[in-house]
Every structure is written in C-alpha cells, then in structure tokens.
Amino acid sequence: MPRRGQIDKSLRKDVRCATCNAEFWVYKALDKYRKTNLYFCSQSCHKVWKHGENNPNWKGGLGVFECDSCGKQIKRKKHEIDKYKSNYCSEECRVEGSKTLIHLLCECCGLEIQRPQRYVDKYNHFFCDRSCRSAWMCGENNPAWNGGSKSLKYCSAWSDKEFKKELKDRDGQQCLNPMCLKTDDKLVLHHIDYHKHNCNPNNLIAACNDCNIRANTERGWHTAWYRAIMHQRYGYVYKTQGV
Image 1 (cartoon, rainbow, N blue to C red):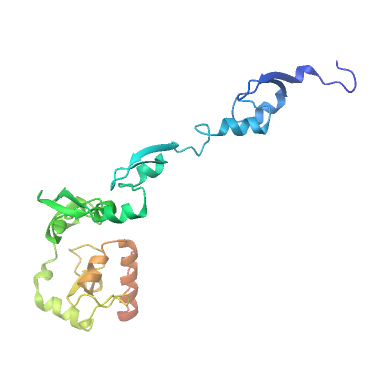
Image 2 (cartoon, helix red, strand yellow; image 1 turned 180 degrees about the horizontal axis):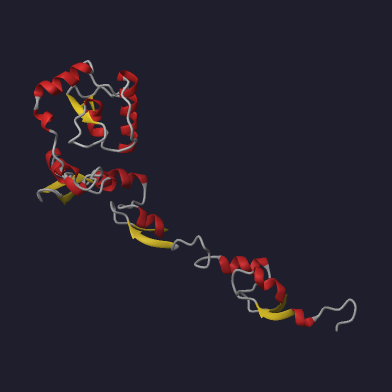
C-alpha cells in the first residue's frame, strides 16, 4: 500500500507520445474515455499529429492540374478539382473557356453536336433538339416514371368528345388550378388520382396542358390539392386520400 501522499503506481502505466516518442505515464482508469490507442504528451504534439491525413476533415490535400483554357499548371485542393468538370487558373480563363465549343453526341439519335463549355459543365445529358430530348425522356428516363402506368387503358367514355366538352363546360372552359402560370392556352382533362380508367366526373378536372404536365411531379400533393378544389367547388367527397 502506498503511504499517505504517494501515488499508487499500479493505477498508472507508461506510454509513448505518438508524435515525438517521448515517454510519460497516464492513469489506466482514463482509458475507457479514450477513442483511440494513441497518446500525446502535450496539445502541441496532438496538433502536429492531427495535421494532414490524420485529420478527420482531410480531403486529399493539394493537387496539380492544368488550366483547361491556357494549359498553365497550378495547385489546388484535390476535392475542388474533382468537384468541377472544368478547372481554370483565373476568372479570365474561365470566361474564355466557357466560349469553347465541345463536340458531343446526341444521347437519342447519336448525331454529333457542339455545345459551349459552360453548357457541358451545367448539364449531364445532351441532345440535338427538343424532339430528341422528348423522345429520350419517354419511359424510364423520365423523372416522373412510375413503372409503366401508360399501359393502363382509358375508360370507354374517354373517346367521347361530348363527354369531355361537358366536363370542360362544367369547369367554365378554364384551368381550375389557382396557381396556374397562364403560359399554355391548351385545355385538357387531368385524372386527379392518375388512374386512366377512372373517368368519374369527380376524378376529372380541367387544367391547362402546362399544369397537367407539372402534376406528374409530387403526385400525392397534387392529388390532395385538386381534390380540395373539387370539394370546395362542387362538394365532391373522396373516401381515400393520395394517389
């Protein structure tokens, strides 16, 4: 047993600093609070060891790259080089490089096209015109794709022009979406629950073509939104919510 005022040596152990290799002792009881098996004799040694790859925020350090405009070699953080498709040494080179035309292939028809560097940096898919873009976005490439609802058949009344006209007349021959941007004059009938075979009048609402297209995103929200409009306008009651 240690005498009064003495430290019990069995409660401590000798260790070495991971930075300077200096030998010192620590209390064994403190090991349960440690996150690593490394020891440091001082905060300065800990800061020296934590600099660089040992830092949890380390992102690769500096790397050397060539300016995509003038070819000049310059140092920059590696994570910044990997972040951008193009790297420039100055603002003047960036402006000049953005004017450069890049040769690409249309992802739909395969024709060779040219686009400015700034366009290539901004987008991931490239097309020769809007028709190719629309053709490519049909099916699984469309962000609103839900597994092939287009295979569902419309109800028999859908081919009746008088039926559609009556519903549009009911809605005053106008888009009933209060948030309509008024950018499209074409009026269509939108299936509120997105089921084409459900042609119940309480499931069809007059909407401009633009609002009908935008309704393909956030379907749950748009279903609740249009049902609320129909309930307020005509008193329709819906048993189920959502798509």
